[in-house]
Image (cartoon, rainbow, N blue to C red; front, side, top):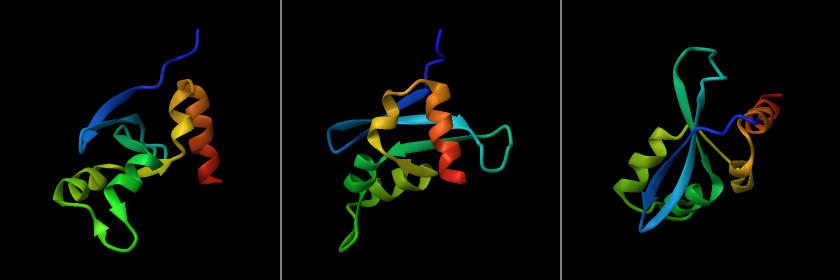
Length: 88
């Protein structure tokens, strides 16, 4: 049986986005970090105007990194493999 990715839902402007809650693989501490999908990043921030609003800024400050949306359909182990590849 494959381990399921631990996710939470974040709502922004009426749309729900899946956020992964994973162990902090960057500092190897017991803390968890949040990884969001690129679609959320694009909704929160525009390169020309900045953050859409203060809610967008607040949400973004809680997300450690953003990855391709398709990763959120992966098992926990496959997701973690993709995250580890980003570190290399």
